[in-house]
Image (cartoon, rainbow, N blue to C red; front, side):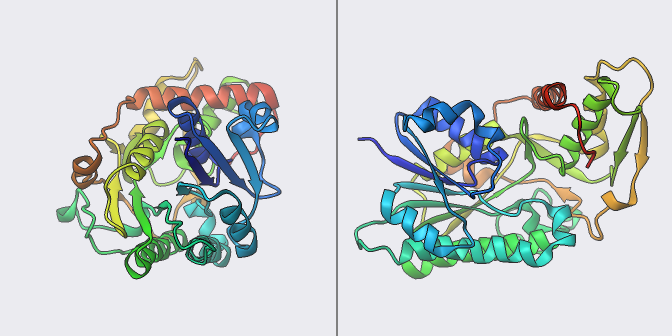
Length: 340
């Protein structure tokens, strides 16, 4: 039987890769939720199919507008809901904390309320609520790798908002017997990653240097922070497997890759892939430093693997190369780029 998958935030990095995955690996219909002003660059390869209503339906709605969500839910009654829409930039949250809290906590509540207030009591979809590893914040070394029941110690307004998202998702599963499940995905990246994230900013700066647009200098923040990296294409497969597993309502899972390194080592990996012949200078920029840094982001994912059998398949260096190639193509096609 043909199923329906709803993706909030379909035009983002993760949402667009999930759209790719579902189109390739299922015969189902995908409803993509996007705001009226959302750029469509990440889904441009699918616009012709969307115009023909060929398995893709884009719906204009906003998680901050519950009326628009109720309309979409009642219209389509999706079997699976992947809630990926968010203000997802930790650095941005320091300058826009209220918008971050509203979008991520109230927006998530709006979505879950729009499902709870359904007109048909028999409707009970599987709902993935995307939290973040950032909820754990600063974890003592002796408690790394991080397990699911580690205490929350959020280190940014974004992390605080995702702690709220996490708790809201679990609450609706436990209080109303809704089929919600929460994930704390650790660092994941790849093509289409926003340039406000360190690895994508570095890749973009390298591509600008290679194109002769920027001088050979990379602006950085804290290079000592430790991260475990996964590829976004492995991440969306994990989400799909989760919603098709026998999870408990309100349960929660860590998900992450296997390659752990400092931000500085990640930068070295990107530079090693560069075609630029000269020396590239590294310059620390104060605005790139967080007031508090979540500097030991290393996951224990045993619980998730036991449930789904998932394991990451894409090698770290391939992820880095694909990210750098993405920015090379972007710069070739657009030229003018803001360095962020």
